[in-house]
Image (cartoon, helix red, strand yellow):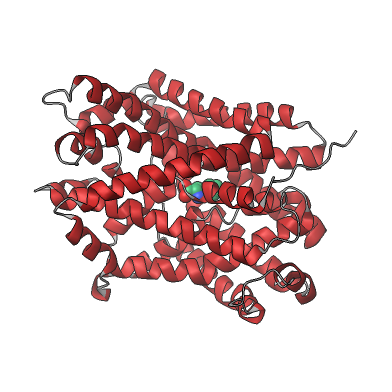
Amino acid sequence: MQEERAHWGSSLGFVLAATGSAIGLGNLWKFPFITWDNRGGAFVLVYLACILAVGLPIMMAEILIGRRGRAGVVGALRSVVGPRWGIVGMWGVLCGFILLSYYTVIAGWSLFYFTRTMGWTLSGYPAGLQTGDLFGEQVGNGGLQLGLSLIFSILTISVVYLGVHRGIERLARTVLPILFGILLLLLASALQMEGSGDAIAFIFRPSFGELEPGGVLEALGHSFFTLSLGMGTMITYGSYIQRNQSIVKMSALIVVLDTVIALIATVIMFSVIFSVAGMEEQVGASTVGMLFISLPELFYSEVPFGTLLGPLFYVLVALAALTSTISLLEVVVSNLIDQHGITRERAALASGGTVFLFTVLAALSFGAVPALSGFEIFAGKAGWFSTADHFVSNWMLPTGGLAITIAAGWFMTRAATRDELVDGTEPGWFRYDLWRLFIRFVAPAAVGAVIIAVVFGVDFS
Ligand code: PHE
């Protein structure tokens, strides 16, 4: 017997769940370090332009395809755009599968740093501890890595198992306010540090001479990643919305919240870095390590109320990651439910378990198993983890995103998309023809430029 299709309890529930998907390691980990690498200012401005010109229109497109199709990504694209488009949906499911497999590993690190910082808060920061060494030890410890990822996978599977309303929405409603609260506490503390002025200038004062062409493309690539676009997450979440809620308003809210959170996280991290003598050079050498190497120690030496904020910060990272991992698994699960008639419980266990097999490979690719850390398919991307991230960020999300702009802009009729976006609930500032111009021309041209750049060897991961 077919169960009634799941749906959100309210439009706020949807917005929180979708915002939870968008806010994740992309905001707290990736955005700060690519902003640092690209020397702030101009890069941030270009990133904001990409969010507005490409991210926002595609966000609306994905949600409208989902709501109209009322099915997981394969079913929705097939019914709304055309039978052949199922293949784009499968591409999205595959992408969710791969992305989840390695995202879980980094999410697991936040659990490790939570327990460590908790220990330091209770019994003092160990004298002479080098956080670089600590990081190396934890990632190289295969048993530990497997344990951390396993815990995180179980959390992800449990939430998805409980369902859209009782699992995903309820978690988002609880977690997002906590997440905003912790972030504001951290911001208040960071703004008291003497480096905060320099940090804000670095982030918001554009100097275009310093931006390289690769940076523009990196900003565009990241706008997909951070908004969870290009693989059907928003199609899937959109398929659980009822009518009579404005897709335009909800999309705008999700995009604004995601962007504001990324900027706040960056202000916090850079305030700390600019307050410590010599830190700039140290971070410069390992920008990726900002979150897990530079910061842990600084909480105990520099940050006002750092002994309390340290553990809280890693709770924040873990929660932000969890609301993203569940959205990735949900893409796979909802598709199994809709296309293959499997129950949610079985689908969650089977797909979560299968993804975990690949998580094992990612977890062991930081030194624990040399064969997994060393192999190289893409030049300079050694190991399972980097290979998967490179493939997803550089190939899968941009191509998936391009396909979605073409589907919504060229294959769906004007009447159909208009019907979803202009239904009396849309805000006064919205201009349908402008959206259509962006989805048909501006967004595909920009994404096409990224793909061409990738073909010619620029790297976004
Ligand atoms: N948006 C998430 C982040 O910023 C990552 C993500 C990508 C989640 C794609 C779901 C789908 O961390």
